[in-house]
Each structure stands twice: as structure tokens, then as C-alpha cells.
Length: 453
Image (tube, rainbow, N blue to C red; front, side, top):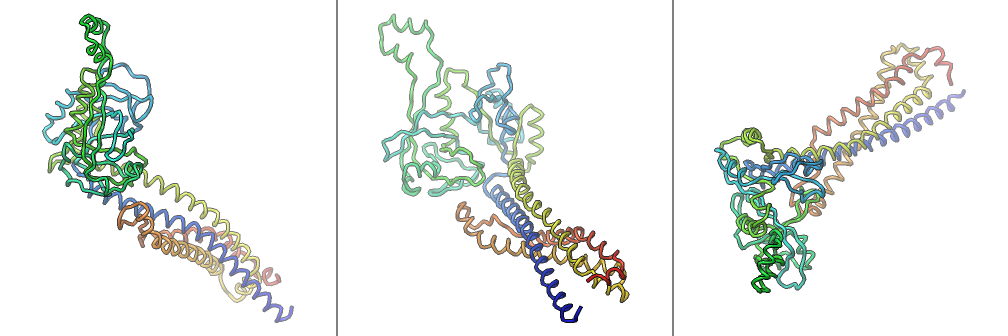
């Protein structure tokens, strides 16, 4: 073979090798990009959730219930023995839950290190109407938890630990949008909420006694439900919570007003004196986790602010793992690309390997040469994927924050040492993938290799 042909062939092989190296590196870059984004999203979301809980929830807060399943799956769905303290769960059709009663509230109030105990009342409004709109709407309502700082779109809320006024109400922004109004325009507007008394049905004896008096109004009063309208003024419009995971938006009123409305609705019924749960605070200097153990020993289920944080982190970690799984699949596929690229490289450079061996290069040196090439492919792909993820993530961060309405928080937080470890792992994976081709190159017979064209 002429010298010119040999040079042309070597040049062609070199260009082909470079092309395969770039393509294989790009395959690794896809996995690196996905994993880098997953790490950044997980880190950013955890940081945001941590700041959100620290700045907006009293770390001493505790949520106390009688039914532990409320923290697990929203209530028990198996067949339950009848008890006055067991009721259907409003969160899940067909589910039941154990409720707190007045004796439980007294027991909790007697706990030395527990303060600011507030029973959680179940309020069921019939309909709601808003000033400036003649329609009536179905809306959910709950009490304002003063241990949590509600994020608002317009208006203001008191600092943590301070309740709102009994005549004030906070309405969610989604309700305001449904009314076709602006958040600022709703401030100070009147909200009327109609409730129906859930009293027991009149007995036959009561109806006959009313008929005997000849008082038609008395008979109608027995047969018709009693309605009562409560009026409030809008203090603030709340933002949709970025950590609610699709929770139902609620109007919020004071705990005192919730107690008054609950007493009206449940008067004379089995629901009177029954509560879904209670919120309270561990006294200053008391570890909420230790108080939690004390309450659990009394038969209650407790969730602390730290438990809520752990729940959020579990969801974040799960989502991060799902995204990361796709990145691992891409890396798994790229491993075979590295093996294929290196094997072809060995075949194309067989004569060169024979020449290097003939000139005295040991087997270990030949193997190292191919392992270094594999490491370079891994480094190039890992660095390229991480760099692209960083550039894109940095550009998207402000838009994501604006879209989610979370201020200046960054939901994609790139940590340099995490990316460095990721690239290092990819280099190691590439070296392992290139081990077999490197071994094949090292074991080539130099005489047979020199005969190969």
C-alpha cells in the first residue's frame, strides 16, 4: 500500500472515530442533562419548601387527631363498629374517621406543655353570595389557623400567632377570578354565608302536638330547616399555595366565629361536640417531638411542623427519583454506545496497536490508552450535559418563579459539588464500559496486528 493511501486511510479513520466519539458523548450528555436538572429541581424545591415552612409556619405547631389514618390515606375505608365519635370523612367518599369529642378537648387542655388549643370545626355552608354579584355560589370554608402565615395576593394578614377579626374573611384568589373581579377590588366587600341547622327531624309526637295547637307556623318551624346568614368583610385575598398539591381552596374565618357557626349547625344533633381534630402549640422551650410522644401515649395521632416538612420532602424526592430514572435509562443506553465505539476503535487501529507493541509498549499501557479515551468520552458528555442544564435552568428560573408566583425563589438550584460528583460518576461509568474493549486491545498479538491492513 502506498504511503499516500496509508495517510488517507488513517485520516478517514480518525474522522470517523471523532464522529463516533461526539455522538456517544451526546448520548451521555442527554442522561447528564436530565440528571442535572433532576438534582437542581430537587435541591431548589427542598430549599423553597424549607424556607416556606420556617418563615410561614410556627415550628411549635401541632395538629392533633384521634385517627392516625387521616395522616396516611384520608380515613379508614374498612367496615367500622358504630360509635358516636365515628363519622364519614368529607375528604374521601365512603371513608370514616374517628373524631375528637369534648372529653378529648378537656384532656388535651390539661396537658401541661400544650397551649393555644383550637378545635377544628366542620363547617358546611349552604351557599355564599358576594357584594356586587346577585348570584349564589357553593364555596368551602374553614377557620383561619394563626400558626400559619397565609400568603396573600391583596390585603394583609396578622403576624403568626395573631387571629383575624370575627367579622373578617379571607377568600382565595380562584374565587375572585370566578367572580371576574380583581383581588384589590374585593377588599372590604361584604360576603354573606348561609348555614343550615343540622337538627334532628321532628318526631311524630312533636308534629301532633303542634297540630293540636292549631299553630300552622309552629308546624312549619318543625318541618323546615332553620337557616342563618353570617356576614363578613373581605380582609385579604389569598394566593394559591404552591405546596397544596391540588388541595381545595377555602375561605377562612376566625376560630371564634367557626365555633359559633358550628354550635348553630350541630345544636341538638349527634355532631354536637365532635371535632375533626385540634391544633395547638408546644410551649416555648418544649421539643414538639417529645410532646408528640406524650400525646401519642394518650391515644392521639399528632403531626408536627417537622413532620409536614418531611412529608413534602418525600413527595419531592419521589418526583426527583422519577425524573432521575429517565436520566439513568439514557445513561444505560449510552454505556453500550461506549462499548461499541471502543470496539470499533480497536478494530480500526489494530495495526497501530501492533506497532506500539512492537516498539515496546506494555499491555498495561495499551489498556490505559483506551480507558483514558473512554474516560474522555464520559467527561465530555457529562460536562456538556451539565453545562447545557445550567444555562437553560438559569434562563428559566425567573420565568418559573413568575409562573408559580413565588417571588425571587429559585426552583432550579444548581450546586457545583453535586454536578462535579455527577461528572465524576459518569467518567467512572465510561471507564467501566470501556474495560472490555481495552482488554481486547491489550491482548492483541503484535505480529498478527501488524499484518492487518
